[in-house]
Image 1 (cartoon, rainbow, N blue to C red):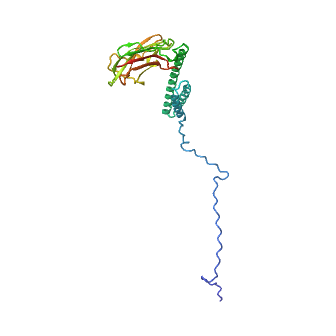
Image 2: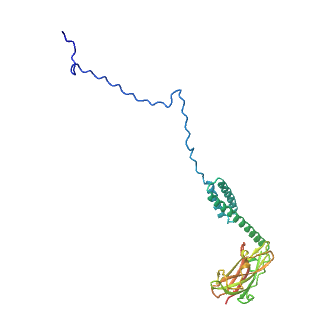
Image 3: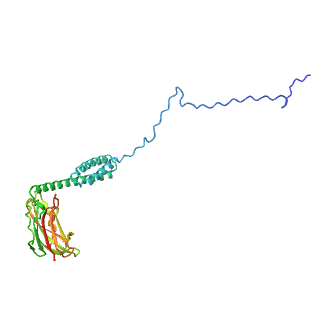
Length: 289
């Protein structure tokens, strides 16, 4: 009996070769959507867009224009531009306040602009009046060559006529007239020697005026202008009248005080506060000693 069973065992048959491994194919990404499939709805952004903070440009512009308006308001004639800038600043400030943008800056700019407009208007009115009065004075034959309207010498107790020179004729066409009526010595609030001078102020203009804002009164000792004194302990001295307005054609008695440097003579000169020339309305040399 023949044995046809093939041998069994690890070495019973030749080794079979291992078939080669197929290369791995890259995984293709799945498309977002397949044909025929509905597109998923886009979810709305939670909270909405981030709001943009409001700009302060209008308020800052109003503040800058307000500063320019108040700076330029003190220059006569040219301050008309300051009035325009002030009006524009107020408009911008109102718009900024209406849109709730930088309220503090807008309010500050509007207030500065309003103050600048008021100052500019007052300065223009005062300048116009001064020019009109100066032109009236020049056209009416005011005292020529800056000759003083009155000249005299005086001591501390009584006035005496001048020894030299002839008094110039009064400037009847001048807007204001001033006479020096007397003087006396006293002390100021610090105890310094002081000269009190009595004036009579007459308003020849067409508008009400006060001595303080119409006349420039100066006292000179040894060629140097004396300081204005503050007198508190002299019952005969009253400086309040210099502020009182005087109607056209009326007169008022006023007093001014000056701190003395020494006991030498004092020269008093009075001119118009605003004028195109230096016409002296009144002049007097007062002997102190």
